[in-house]
Image (cartoon, rainbow, N blue to C red; front, side, top):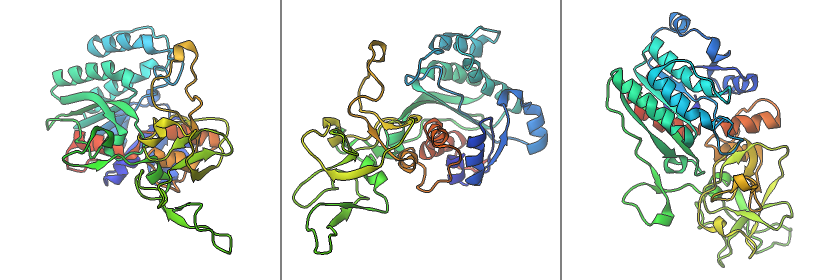
Length: 363
C-alpha cells in the first residue's frame, strides 16, 4: 500500500493483524480489519465499485527459508490446484492462502494483478501465469531483487504480474551491483551506510577539538566513499562485540528478535567481516538482525544469524526495508519488527505495480 501511495494510486486493504492495520491507518491508508478468506469479493464490488488492480501477498512463513518450511511440500499441490482446481490436503494450514487471490481474480476480473511471495513460491506463480494467460491476460512471473530498484538490501522475491489490456514485462532495474563492473545506465546499489546515514554524520575520531567534539564526515554517501581523509574505513559495531557489519553495501535481510541494541559508528578494524567491505546487506526478515551474506547450512544446524550478523534499531530496520525514517509503526517492538520484515519494500512494490498496470493510475 505504501508503494501504491507513492505512485498516487488509491487502494483499500484487507488485513487481519490489528497492529498492521493500525500502522497502515496511521500512515494514511484505508484498510479493513478482517480475515480475507471470510470476505466475499462480490460484496466488495458492491461497496467499492469496479476494481482496477488486485495486489496480494500471501503469508510466506510456511515455505520461507528463514523458518521451519513446514509447507514446502505443499508447493506441487498448490501448482496442481491452480491448474486444475479441486481439494487438496496441505501440510501447513497457511499454504491454502496462496489460492485466495485466484478466487478474487475470478470474481472481480481486475484489469491488472500483482502477486508477491518468497522465491520458492515461483512454481505457484508460474501456474498462476499460465492460468491467467488461458483466461485472456498477459502475464509474467519471475524473481526480482530489491537492491536493483533502490532498496538497500539484497532481498529476492517471486512476483506474478498480469494485465488484461497490455503486455507485461518485468520492471527495468534502476540500480546495479557495482561489483560486476560499470553499467551503461542506472545507479550503483544503495549502500547500508548511505541508507542508515541519511540526515546524519559520522564521527571520524580525527581532529578532536578543545571542547571535546570531533571532526565529522557525511553519512549520506554510498560506501566506500564514507571514511576519513587518511583512508580509514567505517563499520557498524554492536556495543563491544568484536565483529561488525560492513557499511559500504546494502543491508542484509531484516528479521525479528527479542531485543535491539544501539548501533554505533567506529573505524573499521582487522576483525571486520570481509563481506562488509564490498556488498549490500542481506534480506530483512522479522528480526532486528542483519545476517551475513552467503548460504547458511540450516539443515546441519548453522544459525540464520551467525557470528557476522549485526543488530539494528527499529527505525533502521524500516529504512533498510525501504520505508522513510519516522514511519508511524504501531504495536510492540516485536510486532513492529515483524511488520517490517513481512512488508514488501515500497520501492519494489511500486515498480512491480507500475509494470503490471502501466502508466495510468488505477483505484
